[in-house]
Image (cartoon, rainbow, N blue to C red; front, side, top):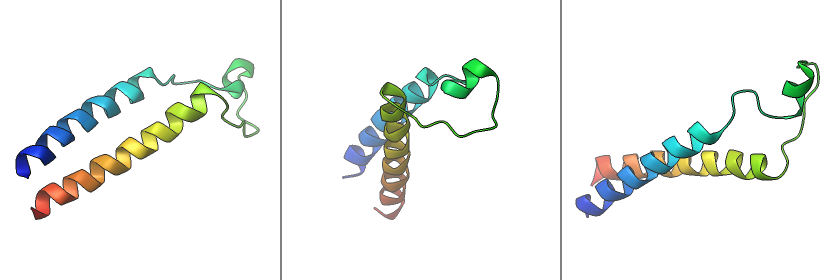
Amino acid sequence: MEKILMITQVIISILLGFIVLIQGKDEGFTASWGSKSFEATRRGPEKVIFRATILLAALFLLNALLFVFV
């Protein structure tokens, strides 16, 4: 069981690192105008990457907690 959790943790950490690196620092509609005065909505691939980052971070945390208690 520990070995499975360790392998899963490594895979999730690699995926999380990759998905964070492919996100642009100033991506989105507001970056092109140079203004942060209004909130732009995420659309298309930007939204998918954002949600995938949240999902992978949650899985990473859950897997880490499971690894500690096993």
